[in-house]
Image 1 (cartoon, rainbow, N blue to C red):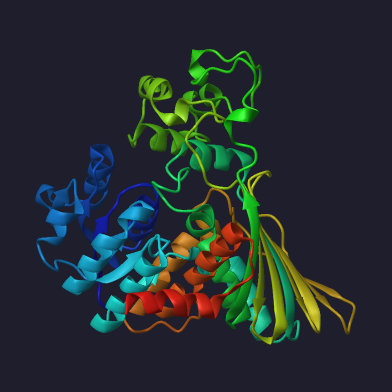
Image 2: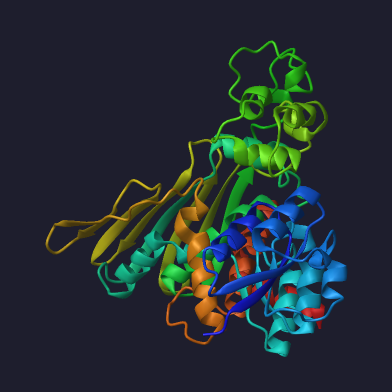
Length: 427
């Protein structure tokens, strides 16, 4: 099969994760160009993949101005920077691996989808939970009819209190104006996962959620704006000095984000804690995304689903699928087996999925899985069930947009009517 050549647009953590997998598959992929504004990240990709200096850019525009120089454009920029390079890359004839979300509005998602359909472009969205060994096994169990007809699902995305403080209170995704709303940026692949497991369309949504805890009125008395200035609170669980300054393997990934340097020194981290939002009191940032949210969904055939996204936990994902003949319980935590209970035999069956860590290691195998599946898909040999067409991905994003509308208006939103309404505006 053909080796796939790749241009990388956005060499942050996600861009590195996917191309690191590609680096382990030299017969399948070759990264030939990179566009990334932060020099150390750009140079790290250059050195890892042996990219000529003339193919390394601080901006995606001069890269795409070269025309189509590869088979695939991997776009892993910030959420609000997906639309323009995606549209241009599609116009040039690139296939895309596009980090979630597709775009930050229904209009952006629809325009990218329509353009890809018009051009005959293959666009794969990084809804990576579909590609994890855990959820692939659950999908197999469901499709084999082990639990009969699905009646209801409860699914939890446990963001984790420290992950929320880093990414959604202090970090790059804390402010909707700079990124996107929480349900879209963090949970669109959970909503996509649920639709994929059920195999039917979502009809109606209702949602509740707020920013309740990570805000100024909850700051301890006497807390400074920056933790490094000396907070009077002892053993604060969110103290930025304790969280970021001490160099060890557990916080190295966070220090890369804080400094922008792939190999940060203690001095660089300390400087960032004096000047960047990562050093601020977690209660005094400019965050405005919710810290907990529930979405109730009605799917075709009267299937009810409750999705709960919360930051007040250790982290991980947990699912309970209830059918007419049995039930499934599972956790993306790297430890727990999938447990199936049969109503007829009254027996439990466990399926062990080893080596998965849903919090820190490649989305429980999903990052690795999507890169491997993509190679087969682009070569026309893919026989799996995970990769959706861009239209299916777009429709599943609409669940998130409709749910946010429901949250903001306090109403139950008909998903089909919601989609028809904004598509009418585009005509």
